Length: 129
Image (cartoon, rainbow, N blue to C red; front, side, top):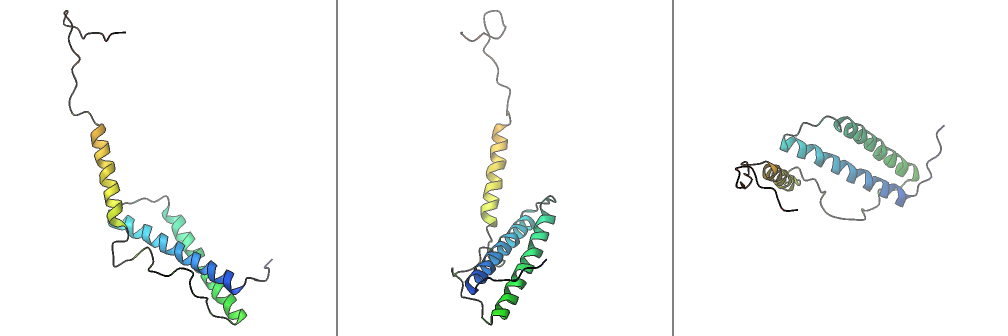
């Protein structure tokens, strides 16, 4: 059962801004995964489904504004999207994080066997209690 859309112009505009920001976020995740060569398949179907839903939300917003006879209100925030396909897109930060994780794992690996100090009998000395 479909209920009538009673959203105001402001509510429709905010809904559209949220949908655009979420789509920008998901595009950035996909570009970062491709750039870093990450092949993670658990989240990919969910992201595809969410992006399809975002298209439906934006289409419903446009239809609502046509129904009201209004235009999309100006955005509440101005500026470029977070994901810039021509720019870095946050990939440099992701590379730094991955490099730090790799260094951390390498530091945890034993590089050489540590020898216990020998006692008088040639056996390792017991630590004091």
